[in-house]
Image (cartoon, rainbow, N blue to C red; front, side, top):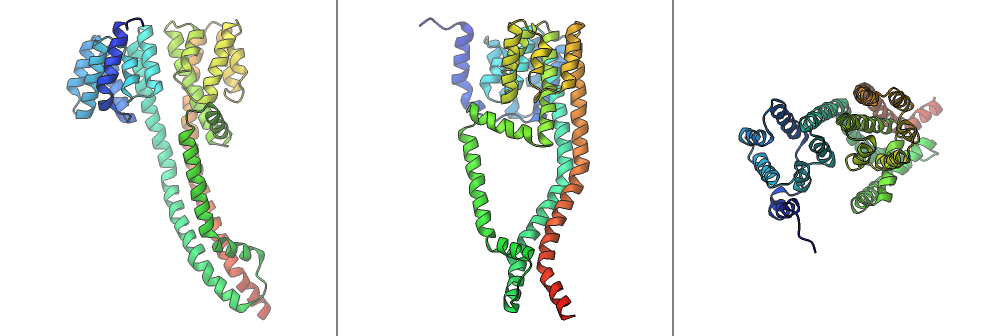
Length: 369
Protein backbone atom coordinates (compact mmCIF):
# COMPACT_ATOMS: atom_id res chain seq x y z
CA UNK A 1 0.00 0.00 0.00
CA UNK A 2 1.31 3.45 -0.89
CA UNK A 3 2.46 5.59 2.06
CA UNK A 4 0.11 8.25 3.30
CA UNK A 5 0.79 11.86 2.39
CA UNK A 6 1.51 14.45 5.05
CA UNK A 7 -2.09 15.67 5.18
CA UNK A 8 -3.46 12.12 5.39
CA UNK A 9 -1.00 11.23 8.16
CA UNK A 10 -1.94 14.32 10.13
CA UNK A 11 -5.63 13.54 9.59
CA UNK A 12 -5.17 10.01 10.92
CA UNK A 13 -3.23 11.27 13.95
CA UNK A 14 -5.85 13.94 14.56
CA UNK A 15 -8.67 11.39 14.52
CA UNK A 16 -6.79 9.03 16.81
CA UNK A 17 -5.81 11.69 19.30
CA UNK A 18 -8.88 13.86 19.56
CA UNK A 19 -12.01 11.79 19.04
CA UNK A 20 -12.39 11.26 22.78
CA UNK A 21 -12.13 14.97 23.38
CA UNK A 22 -14.54 16.05 20.66
CA UNK A 23 -17.17 13.35 20.94
CA UNK A 24 -20.29 13.86 18.85
CA UNK A 25 -22.00 16.78 20.55
CA UNK A 26 -22.22 19.91 18.42
CA UNK A 27 -21.84 23.53 19.37
CA UNK A 28 -25.08 25.47 19.79
CA UNK A 29 -26.06 28.09 17.25
CA UNK A 30 -25.24 31.08 19.46
CA UNK A 31 -21.69 29.88 20.02
CA UNK A 32 -21.26 29.27 16.29
CA UNK A 33 -22.56 32.71 15.40
CA UNK A 34 -20.12 34.36 17.82
CA UNK A 35 -17.21 32.19 16.69
CA UNK A 36 -17.74 32.75 12.96
CA UNK A 37 -18.44 36.48 13.39
CA UNK A 38 -15.28 37.06 15.43
CA UNK A 39 -13.16 34.97 13.08
CA UNK A 40 -14.53 36.90 10.09
CA UNK A 41 -13.81 40.27 11.73
CA UNK A 42 -10.21 39.28 12.45
CA UNK A 43 -9.53 38.01 8.93
CA UNK A 44 -11.32 40.96 7.30
CA UNK A 45 -9.11 43.37 9.30
CA UNK A 46 -6.01 41.99 7.57
CA UNK A 47 -4.67 39.71 10.31
CA UNK A 48 -3.21 36.47 8.98
CA UNK A 49 -4.97 33.18 9.60
CA UNK A 50 -2.59 31.83 12.27
CA UNK A 51 -2.60 35.06 14.29
CA UNK A 52 -6.39 35.33 14.04
CA UNK A 53 -6.78 31.80 15.40
CA UNK A 54 -4.43 32.53 18.29
CA UNK A 55 -6.38 35.66 19.19
CA UNK A 56 -9.63 33.68 19.14
CA UNK A 57 -8.15 31.14 21.54
CA UNK A 58 -6.84 33.81 23.92
CA UNK A 59 -10.13 35.72 23.96
CA UNK A 60 -12.24 32.63 24.65
CA UNK A 61 -13.30 32.39 28.30
CA UNK A 62 -15.20 29.12 28.14
CA UNK A 63 -12.77 26.27 28.82
CA UNK A 64 -14.52 23.76 26.60
CA UNK A 65 -14.61 26.05 23.54
CA UNK A 66 -11.00 27.09 24.12
CA UNK A 67 -9.93 23.43 24.12
CA UNK A 68 -11.90 22.90 20.92
CA UNK A 69 -10.20 25.87 19.25
CA UNK A 70 -6.76 24.75 20.37
CA UNK A 71 -7.27 21.30 18.85
CA UNK A 72 -8.56 22.79 15.61
CA UNK A 73 -5.57 25.14 15.48
CA UNK A 74 -3.11 22.29 16.03
CA UNK A 75 -4.77 20.28 13.27
CA UNK A 76 -4.59 23.17 10.77
CA UNK A 77 -0.97 23.95 11.67
CA UNK A 78 -0.24 20.27 11.14
CA UNK A 79 -1.42 20.47 7.54
CA UNK A 80 -5.13 19.61 7.68
CA UNK A 81 -7.57 22.01 5.95
CA UNK A 82 -9.85 23.83 8.35
CA UNK A 83 -13.02 22.34 6.83
CA UNK A 84 -11.59 18.84 7.29
CA UNK A 85 -10.69 19.58 10.92
CA UNK A 86 -14.27 20.79 11.39
CA UNK A 87 -15.64 17.60 9.85
CA UNK A 88 -13.41 15.22 11.81
CA UNK A 89 -14.01 17.06 15.07
CA UNK A 90 -17.71 16.15 15.02
CA UNK A 91 -18.83 19.52 16.42
CA UNK A 92 -19.92 21.13 13.16
CA UNK A 93 -22.62 20.34 10.62
CA UNK A 94 -22.18 19.43 6.96
CA UNK A 95 -23.24 22.99 6.10
CA UNK A 96 -20.46 24.47 8.27
CA UNK A 97 -17.82 22.21 6.78
CA UNK A 98 -19.03 22.75 3.22
CA UNK A 99 -19.14 26.53 3.42
CA UNK A 100 -15.68 26.71 5.06
CA UNK A 101 -14.39 24.40 2.32
CA UNK A 102 -15.78 26.79 -0.29
CA UNK A 103 -13.96 29.68 1.37
CA UNK A 104 -10.67 27.83 1.62
CA UNK A 105 -10.73 26.54 -1.95
CA UNK A 106 -11.71 29.91 -3.44
CA UNK A 107 -9.47 32.05 -1.24
CA UNK A 108 -12.45 33.87 0.31
CA UNK A 109 -12.58 32.32 3.75
CA UNK A 110 -13.61 35.58 5.42
CA UNK A 111 -16.69 35.80 3.15
CA UNK A 112 -17.62 32.21 3.98
CA UNK A 113 -17.31 32.95 7.68
CA UNK A 114 -19.50 36.04 7.24
CA UNK A 115 -22.07 33.88 5.48
CA UNK A 116 -22.11 31.39 8.37
CA UNK A 117 -22.32 34.14 11.00
CA UNK A 118 -25.27 35.69 9.14
CA UNK A 119 -26.86 32.26 8.67
CA UNK A 120 -26.79 31.45 12.39
CA UNK A 121 -27.91 34.96 13.31
CA UNK A 122 -30.98 34.66 11.08
CA UNK A 123 -31.58 31.08 12.19
CA UNK A 124 -31.65 32.22 15.81
CA UNK A 125 -34.03 35.05 14.87
CA UNK A 126 -36.32 32.61 13.07
CA UNK A 127 -36.30 30.28 16.06
CA UNK A 128 -37.25 33.19 18.32
CA UNK A 129 -40.12 33.97 15.95
CA UNK A 130 -41.34 30.40 16.04
CA UNK A 131 -40.88 30.20 19.81
CA UNK A 132 -42.81 33.42 20.33
CA UNK A 133 -45.50 32.19 17.96
CA UNK A 134 -46.09 28.84 19.65
CA UNK A 135 -45.10 29.36 23.31
CA UNK A 136 -48.36 30.94 24.55
CA UNK A 137 -50.63 28.71 22.44
CA UNK A 138 -48.61 25.67 23.55
CA UNK A 139 -49.19 26.52 27.21
CA UNK A 140 -52.90 26.95 26.57
CA UNK A 141 -53.00 23.70 24.61
CA UNK A 142 -51.16 21.78 27.35
CA UNK A 143 -53.50 23.06 30.09
CA UNK A 144 -56.55 22.38 27.96
CA UNK A 145 -55.39 18.84 27.20
CA UNK A 146 -54.91 18.17 30.92
CA UNK A 147 -58.44 19.44 31.54
CA UNK A 148 -59.74 17.37 28.63
CA UNK A 149 -58.07 14.19 29.95
CA UNK A 150 -59.54 14.88 33.39
CA UNK A 151 -63.00 15.30 31.88
CA UNK A 152 -62.72 12.09 29.83
CA UNK A 153 -61.37 9.97 32.70
CA UNK A 154 -63.37 11.45 35.62
CA UNK A 155 -66.32 13.60 34.57
CA UNK A 156 -67.61 11.50 31.68
CA UNK A 157 -67.73 8.23 33.74
CA UNK A 158 -69.77 10.10 36.40
CA UNK A 159 -72.33 11.14 33.79
CA UNK A 160 -72.27 7.61 32.37
CA UNK A 161 -73.29 6.16 35.74
CA UNK A 162 -76.16 8.66 36.05
CA UNK A 163 -77.46 7.93 32.54
CA UNK A 164 -77.14 4.16 33.11
CA UNK A 165 -79.43 4.38 36.16
CA UNK A 166 -81.86 6.61 34.29
CA UNK A 167 -82.03 4.28 31.29
CA UNK A 168 -83.33 5.38 27.94
CA UNK A 169 -81.69 5.99 24.57
CA UNK A 170 -78.72 8.42 24.56
CA UNK A 171 -77.90 10.75 21.65
CA UNK A 172 -75.25 9.52 19.21
CA UNK A 173 -72.67 12.12 20.20
CA UNK A 174 -73.06 11.20 23.88
CA UNK A 175 -72.60 7.48 23.14
CA UNK A 176 -69.51 8.28 21.07
CA UNK A 177 -67.88 10.34 23.86
CA UNK A 178 -68.70 7.69 26.49
CA UNK A 179 -67.24 5.00 24.23
CA UNK A 180 -64.10 7.07 23.75
CA UNK A 181 -63.83 7.49 27.52
CA UNK A 182 -64.16 3.75 28.10
CA UNK A 183 -61.34 2.98 25.66
CA UNK A 184 -59.22 6.06 26.35
CA UNK A 185 -56.42 4.20 28.16
CA UNK A 186 -56.18 1.66 25.33
CA UNK A 187 -56.05 4.48 22.79
CA UNK A 188 -53.34 6.23 24.82
CA UNK A 189 -51.25 3.07 25.14
CA UNK A 190 -51.67 2.33 21.44
CA UNK A 191 -50.59 5.86 20.54
CA UNK A 192 -47.47 5.51 22.68
CA UNK A 193 -46.61 2.20 21.04
CA UNK A 194 -47.09 3.65 17.55
CA UNK A 195 -45.04 6.75 18.42
CA UNK A 196 -42.27 4.57 19.87
CA UNK A 197 -42.27 2.38 16.76
CA UNK A 198 -42.00 5.44 14.49
CA UNK A 199 -39.14 6.87 16.54
CA UNK A 200 -37.37 3.51 16.47
CA UNK A 201 -37.80 3.18 12.71
CA UNK A 202 -36.55 6.72 12.19
CA UNK A 203 -33.47 6.06 14.31
CA UNK A 204 -32.46 2.74 12.76
CA UNK A 205 -33.27 3.79 9.17
CA UNK A 206 -32.02 7.37 9.32
CA UNK A 207 -29.24 6.60 6.83
CA UNK A 208 -31.49 4.72 4.41
CA UNK A 209 -32.20 6.68 1.23
CA UNK A 210 -35.65 5.11 0.92
CA UNK A 211 -36.55 6.23 4.45
CA UNK A 212 -35.17 9.72 3.79
CA UNK A 213 -37.25 9.90 0.62
CA UNK A 214 -40.46 8.90 2.40
CA UNK A 215 -39.90 11.33 5.29
CA UNK A 216 -39.02 14.18 2.91
CA UNK A 217 -42.15 13.63 0.81
CA UNK A 218 -44.33 13.64 3.94
CA UNK A 219 -42.72 16.84 5.24
CA UNK A 220 -43.07 18.65 1.92
CA UNK A 221 -46.76 17.72 1.70
CA UNK A 222 -47.65 19.40 5.01
CA UNK A 223 -49.81 22.44 4.14
CA UNK A 224 -47.77 25.13 5.94
CA UNK A 225 -44.58 23.42 7.09
CA UNK A 226 -43.87 22.05 3.62
CA UNK A 227 -43.97 25.50 2.02
CA UNK A 228 -41.75 26.96 4.74
CA UNK A 229 -39.28 24.11 4.27
CA UNK A 230 -39.13 24.76 0.52
CA UNK A 231 -38.47 28.46 1.12
CA UNK A 232 -35.74 27.58 3.61
CA UNK A 233 -33.85 25.35 1.17
CA UNK A 234 -34.41 27.59 -1.84
CA UNK A 235 -32.87 30.46 0.11
CA UNK A 236 -29.82 28.35 1.03
CA UNK A 237 -29.55 27.09 -2.54
CA UNK A 238 -29.38 30.63 -3.92
CA UNK A 239 -27.04 32.00 -1.25
CA UNK A 240 -24.57 29.13 -1.36
CA UNK A 241 -24.50 28.96 -5.15
CA UNK A 242 -23.95 32.73 -5.24
CA UNK A 243 -21.05 32.35 -2.81
CA UNK A 244 -19.51 29.70 -5.05
CA UNK A 245 -20.24 31.29 -8.41
CA UNK A 246 -19.12 34.78 -7.39
CA UNK A 247 -15.87 33.26 -6.07
CA UNK A 248 -15.00 31.94 -9.50
CA UNK A 249 -16.13 28.34 -9.05
CA UNK A 250 -17.69 27.00 -12.29
CA UNK A 251 -21.46 26.55 -12.08
CA UNK A 252 -21.27 22.78 -12.63
CA UNK A 253 -18.71 22.31 -9.87
CA UNK A 254 -20.67 24.58 -7.56
CA UNK A 255 -23.88 22.56 -7.98
CA UNK A 256 -21.94 19.33 -7.39
CA UNK A 257 -20.50 20.76 -4.16
CA UNK A 258 -24.00 21.59 -2.91
CA UNK A 259 -24.76 17.85 -2.73
CA UNK A 260 -22.49 17.57 0.30
CA UNK A 261 -23.75 20.75 1.96
CA UNK A 262 -27.55 20.74 1.64
CA UNK A 263 -28.23 17.09 2.42
CA UNK A 264 -32.05 17.14 2.56
CA UNK A 265 -32.88 14.21 0.31
CA UNK A 266 -35.02 15.75 -2.50
CA UNK A 267 -32.71 18.74 -2.91
CA UNK A 268 -29.63 16.55 -2.87
CA UNK A 269 -31.16 14.48 -5.67
CA UNK A 270 -32.09 17.63 -7.59
CA UNK A 271 -28.49 18.89 -7.39
CA UNK A 272 -27.28 15.59 -8.83
CA UNK A 273 -29.74 15.81 -11.72
CA UNK A 274 -29.01 19.53 -12.36
CA UNK A 275 -25.26 18.84 -12.42
CA UNK A 276 -25.80 15.97 -14.86
CA UNK A 277 -27.85 18.27 -17.12
CA UNK A 278 -25.21 21.00 -17.01
CA UNK A 279 -22.57 18.42 -17.89
CA UNK A 280 -24.65 17.57 -20.98
CA UNK A 281 -24.72 21.22 -22.04
CA UNK A 282 -28.26 22.09 -20.97
CA UNK A 283 -29.30 25.39 -19.42
CA UNK A 284 -29.17 25.85 -15.66
CA UNK A 285 -32.66 27.37 -15.37
CA UNK A 286 -34.10 24.61 -17.56
CA UNK A 287 -32.70 21.93 -15.26
CA UNK A 288 -34.03 23.72 -12.16
CA UNK A 289 -37.44 23.99 -13.85
CA UNK A 290 -37.58 20.18 -13.99
CA UNK A 291 -38.30 20.19 -10.22
CA UNK A 292 -41.48 22.29 -9.81
CA UNK A 293 -42.19 20.77 -6.37
CA UNK A 294 -38.87 22.05 -5.03
CA UNK A 295 -38.29 25.37 -6.81
CA UNK A 296 -40.87 28.14 -7.32
CA UNK A 297 -41.78 29.19 -10.85
CA UNK A 298 -40.77 32.78 -10.02
CA UNK A 299 -37.27 31.64 -9.06
CA UNK A 300 -36.93 29.64 -12.29
CA UNK A 301 -37.96 32.65 -14.42
CA UNK A 302 -35.50 34.96 -12.69
CA UNK A 303 -32.68 32.41 -13.01
CA UNK A 304 -33.46 32.17 -16.71
CA UNK A 305 -33.24 35.96 -17.00
CA UNK A 306 -29.95 35.92 -15.10
CA UNK A 307 -28.53 33.33 -17.48
CA UNK A 308 -29.63 35.19 -20.58
CA UNK A 309 -28.26 38.55 -19.37
CA UNK A 310 -25.07 37.06 -17.92
CA UNK A 311 -26.05 38.31 -14.44
CA UNK A 312 -26.72 34.98 -12.79
CA UNK A 313 -24.52 35.83 -9.80
CA UNK A 314 -26.50 38.98 -8.99
CA UNK A 315 -29.78 37.18 -9.52
CA UNK A 316 -28.79 34.39 -7.11
CA UNK A 317 -27.78 36.91 -4.45
CA UNK A 318 -30.99 38.92 -4.83
CA UNK A 319 -33.22 35.85 -4.79
CA UNK A 320 -31.46 34.48 -1.70
CA UNK A 321 -32.18 37.71 0.15
CA UNK A 322 -35.76 37.99 -1.11
CA UNK A 323 -36.68 34.41 -0.26
CA UNK A 324 -35.16 34.80 3.22
CA UNK A 325 -37.23 37.95 3.78
CA UNK A 326 -40.37 36.16 2.56
CA UNK A 327 -39.65 33.24 4.89
CA UNK A 328 -39.34 35.55 7.90
CA UNK A 329 -42.58 37.31 6.92
CA UNK A 330 -44.43 34.00 6.73
CA UNK A 331 -43.08 32.94 10.11
CA UNK A 332 -44.45 36.16 11.62
CA UNK A 333 -47.79 35.53 9.94
CA UNK A 334 -47.79 32.01 11.34
CA UNK A 335 -47.40 33.45 14.83
CA UNK A 336 -50.40 35.74 14.35
CA UNK A 337 -52.60 32.91 13.05
CA UNK A 338 -51.49 30.02 15.24
CA UNK A 339 -52.60 31.46 18.58
CA UNK A 340 -56.30 32.05 17.80
CA UNK A 341 -56.46 28.82 15.77
CA UNK A 342 -55.20 26.69 18.67
CA UNK A 343 -57.45 28.44 21.17
CA UNK A 344 -60.44 27.86 18.88
CA UNK A 345 -59.49 24.20 18.43
CA UNK A 346 -59.19 23.62 22.18
CA UNK A 347 -62.48 25.43 22.79
CA UNK A 348 -64.23 23.20 20.26
CA UNK A 349 -62.87 20.04 21.92
CA UNK A 350 -64.08 21.11 25.36
CA UNK A 351 -67.42 22.26 23.94
CA UNK A 352 -68.00 18.89 22.25
CA UNK A 353 -67.43 17.02 25.52
CA UNK A 354 -69.65 19.37 27.54
CA UNK A 355 -72.48 19.43 25.01
CA UNK A 356 -72.41 15.65 24.60
CA UNK A 357 -72.70 15.18 28.37
CA UNK A 358 -75.48 17.71 28.97
CA UNK A 359 -77.49 17.02 25.82
CA UNK A 360 -79.47 14.09 27.38
CA UNK A 361 -80.40 16.37 30.31
CA UNK A 362 -81.67 19.03 27.93
CA UNK A 363 -83.79 16.41 26.12
CA UNK A 364 -85.06 15.08 29.43
CA UNK A 365 -86.06 18.58 30.53
CA UNK A 366 -87.90 19.14 27.25
CA UNK A 367 -89.79 15.85 27.65
CA UNK A 368 -90.87 16.66 31.21
CA UNK A 369 -92.01 20.10 30.17
